[in-house]
Length: 259
Ligand SMILES: Nc1ncnc2c1ncn2[C@@H]1O[C@H](COP(=O)(O)OP(=O)(O)OP(=O)(O)O)[C@@H](O)[C@H]1O
Image 1 (tube, rainbow, N blue to C red):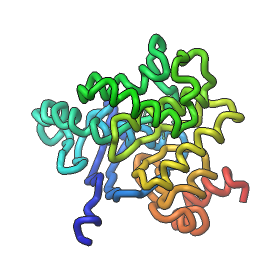
Image 2 (cartoon, rainbow, N blue to C red; image 1 turned 45 degrees about the vertical axis):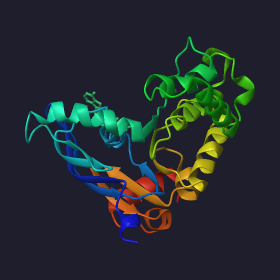
Image 3 (tube, rainbow, N blue to C red; image 1 turned 180 degrees about the vertical axis):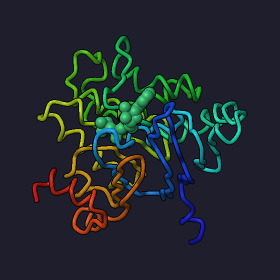
Image 4 (tube, rainbow, N blue to C red; image 1 turned 120 degrees about the vertical axis):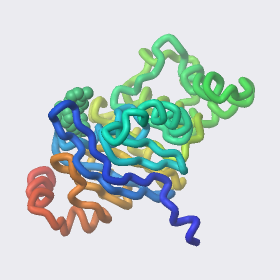
């Protein structure tokens, strides 16, 4: 049992500065297999920066992130950590997928090619097998009928579902979602959330920066409320939404939940 409680991601004393601006101040967090963590908080509180540090899209100023035994370390402690981080990131990115607000599909590749690209190029996987698997993943997100379409021929919701299939194609252990529905017209939000709900049900470990309080309340089993570069609430949706300890969270929820 002890083995299963080993965190998938362990964040210790993480800080991130942009010059003088202290964006993340001191983050300590362990994330376990199968957890669906919603990261919420006011604009500018550091949510996206935190997520981006987890797969080294941002350099860490200080502190440490451990993912599956591979570490990223702050460069304030030792400048040489930058080189080590770059090496570590190559391993980490194979285990940690990311879904972006703006989908980031390759515009000149078809839907199927988008999903096949990383396994074939990065993992050097067999093309025929990858194609079969890519079609299964497209079916899983309801996009197998559009395998030969190009991204510009799709709605935002459809593009985001393809982006999720593309991420799944790398068989990640964890998926990071950075405001995956924020760029969508309201009518397409539900279809993307439904795919994310299915992933959560299937046991995928997910960290989701979102303004969708409904998703956070219904699907997440853990909610982290960030403010000013700190995680100031961390608990079940019930605990954080209904019984926040901090005045800052109480204020924030009373505004957005209209209570
Ligand atoms: N590359 C950068 N260079 C300088 N400052 C940055 C950079 N990226 C983010 N910031 C600043 O860091 C702070 C936190 O940004 P971040 O995007 O992490 O916040 P957020 O909580 O995700 O906000 P939002 O909900 O509006 O997306 C903001 O003040 C932002 O302007």
